[in-house]
Length: 300
View 1 (cartoon, rainbow, N blue to C red):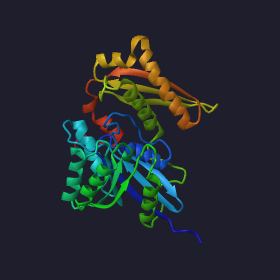
View 2: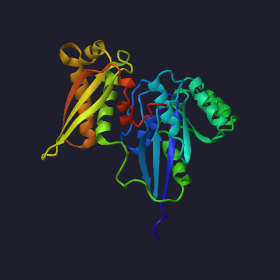
View 3: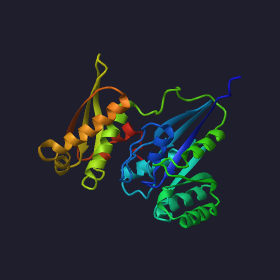
View 4: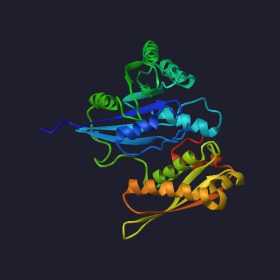
């Protein structure tokens, strides 16, 4: 007898740099969301799809939730809360490496309580905190009345993740699958390729170029030998930022392109020819078309 199919949505929310993207990549077993040591690298909602037996779980990775100051910030935070609207389960990721709950995470807990919404609490980076401090955090969070369950994990090492996934699988409602069996994300390949390059910019340029850049895939050409030629444009806001990305004699853009190409070849399992160009677009954060490309609300 064939097992009855189940399917449901799980929204992963949290403050910037809590480990949401690392967790979703670990759960899915493939890279669907970019990761860097910098906060606020995820800009839009990303769906990661996990199939366990007859159950399909659609995880929604969202931008970090923080106090927004600019239009772009407001759009990202709005997308994060929208990601919880239709979810069967809300997972709140709180990183505990500092031995306490930061103000941004506490603000999310307060808002969930205000909205009378329940969530599952996932305490992340438990390998970096003293056990007594960890238990104190768990006790304090439990006393808020917001959480139905509390898990302690390390998204990076995978410690505790299997149990979390097992319990989530059991809670999914009966229903038809939303995606094909071999699909791991709803993100178009062109957008994922641009995100991979954006991740390399974040990692390599660290504090020099915080959030003034975006990447777009302009052309994607497939050849008979199985290889693919990808042309991308890195948009920055000022000429000085363009100079940083290019580097002396073009050395920096070459390093970024090489790192991105190698990862794309691993993901696509084929040869990749990647061309990167850098252009100045002063007001890209005020361009409605950019927001539409990421699925963000320009008027949030």
